[in-house]
Length: 71
Image (cartoon, rainbow, N blue to C red; front, side, top):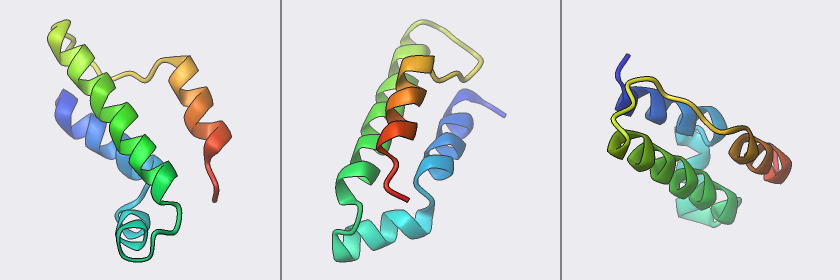
């Protein structure tokens, strides 16, 4: 799996497509879903710029995402 696909899979792990759609339509968990997409996309851009070929989420980002998870 390439870096982009691994990032996408991580986004779905923290905010499934169903949760993303619900956030968009109803606003439920909108802040968390937005944070997941922003943080993980930024991490992807950073890894890509560094020439990384393997996806990873730093432990501090994992801790934030897990701590703020509302569901």
